[in-house]
Length: 216
Image 1 (cartoon, rainbow, N blue to C red):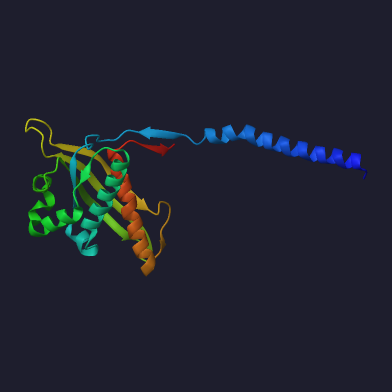
Image 2 (image 1 turned 135 degrees about the horizontal axis):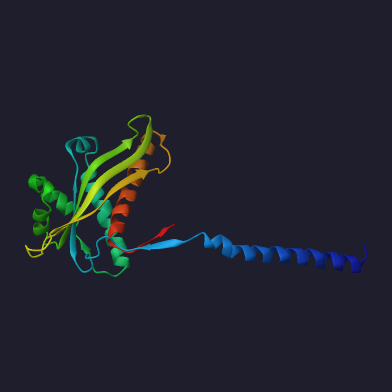
């Protein structure tokens, strides 16, 4: 092949590549059109500039199976809220869940009394989580793991006037991890699934208190 023919072939190859790139660029907007996000407003937007305590209640059977579930869930949620609200410069202060747990140890009646907890820590609001169901093992197949937490969520206004509403009911939460299927039970997996379930639960609950984006 002569040089002229080689240059012609090179131009054809280059033209083909440019055409392909151009076609890809034309397709790009179509691909990204499917990647929409929806802005979600908070269910409860009164936390900025306030002091907030998190109170978690679990029944006796859950407490027996997961001895530290109460403080662990409270800690994951308080940490997630503090991180997200601080990033948004909202000036919210979360009471240390360890202090709340110490108080509950000496005042067990306060486990179901958000107002007592709120007054003890000079909080403006108490987020009260009532865990209705919690499991890490699949109940039908105990050799498999799939985290599940179902809970009600309410916010209690500690400083409001008596004539105004003091309790705000938010939508309940049903959280699963993994989303699709269970994983085989091992000592390592048990810890990993439990912690991942706690993190996901904390994220789902925390999102009730700040604006965020979700995929459509």
